[in-house]
Image 1 (cartoon, one colour):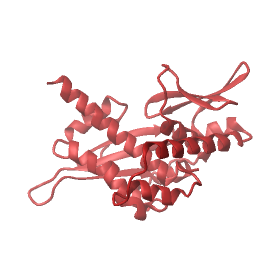
Image 2 (cartoon, helix red, strand yellow):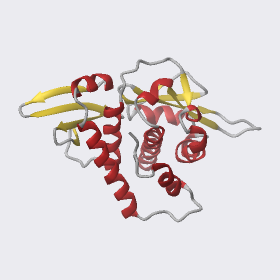
Image 3 (cartoon, helix red, strand yellow):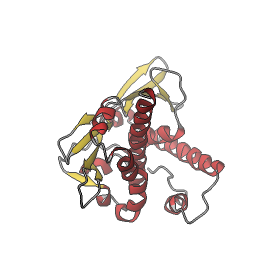
Image 4 (cartoon, helix red, strand yellow):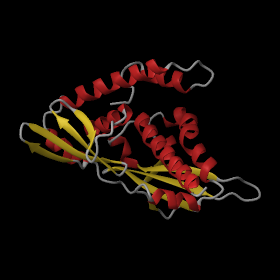
Length: 240
């Protein structure tokens, strides 16, 4: 199950990301996400044993009166998926959930295979299609991190802690995030020197493809990246 799904997704993604082409307008984006959400809902609705599927995803399944409820965490926030109408909402407030987050949560729930951690880390290039899509992934994730944290990597640890991240012993500075119960993402930075500038990488457990597609992994990493940057900006604004 993919973010853009079967709507000629590869071609559409290439058009969206290729800066030499005219970007589609906002209505096209909205339409693509609406179709992806519709297909994600249909796919989840076809699963016969939803409780077993929740176990595979590390989510909590409950029956509350006439409704079935799935409690799931995504990037340290609690969400509720209600059945059989299948809607995604935040568990602790009434703020509207962006449709992109809804699609991602439903994709994870529907695709989860329950595969345990392999204890083997891989990079984006090792994902299906990763070599082809890597330049875009790099532009949307690693490069913004380097721009804002490359010269002061210690800030990455401070900011990550405020949004559920944790320090990891890799590179010069590294932080990990539990995107979902069974999916973790690790951002690694290396300090630059007189010869080379700062460098960075994002790694995953090799089992990640049993939970998310390559396109969905890009969305998760981009979301982590810009939440980190926005938290940093907010801190800098408060500090004057």
